Length: 152
Length: 153
Image 1 (cartoon, chains in turn cyan, yellow):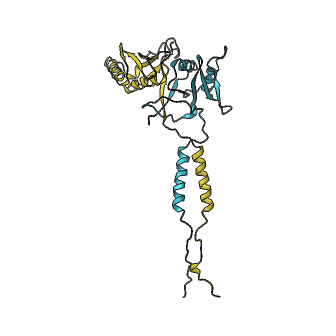
Image 2 (cartoon, helix red, strand yellow; image 1 turned 90 degrees about the vertical axis):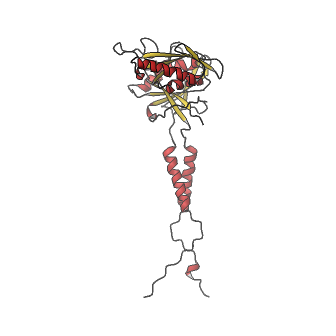
Image 3 (spheres, one colour; image 1 turned 60 degrees about the vertical axis):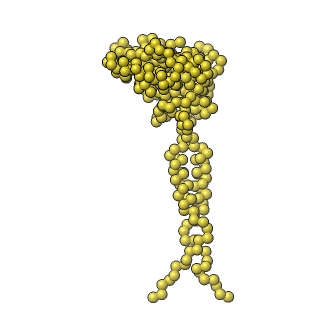
């Protein structure tokens, strides 16, 4: 019986299989590692102090980030407003009102795992951090975390 | 006219991968551009010390307060600081760590466990944040577990 010969495939284009393998690995890596669509409100322009020690926070769902900078005699705080999804300025004291305290109390609610992340410039004076810490204490926030940068 | 033999023609044996490569490349570029990474950032966790009065909230009278250990810190210039702990003044983290370790060991020997010692860093108003972090690290290096900042100004 005469067998039918299969046509020989003569491939003229480059073999893209290794390229696809590598690209797929990269995509999986980025999907696992990159934080896409997560806005913490962290101000990337702040020059954080360096520390060797420190922990990674696993649960960012219960945290609020406060960017603290100097503005006159009082600190200027920017934080992510969950309603608008944008960073907004928030004062410690506004006339007789205390917006930051009310904001933290609202977010904390009955959540005992609520955390605050404080981000401040490494050359910021403590007099600007202290009012924020006092407000955290008044809002009964038990867990305050200071963001620092790992040394290169 | 004689036709060419089949072996010399071009046959695509597999599926066309070009659209797949195009889409995958677009996804890759999107992820590379939009993804943000935790680039070398970590956190120093602080508790707010309970006190009979003051910023940290009022402790229950039934709960014994932790043994306080105060470290006074001031910035003497943009790059230098001075700390005072246990009646001694130091100007660098390594020495401060040694003093704090001695103090912890003395308290441990006096039957005060480390988790019952509340280190309170008491900075001056103009103390730089980076100097506070150095002192904070010295306390952590000395194996203290409760470190907080004073809010008593």
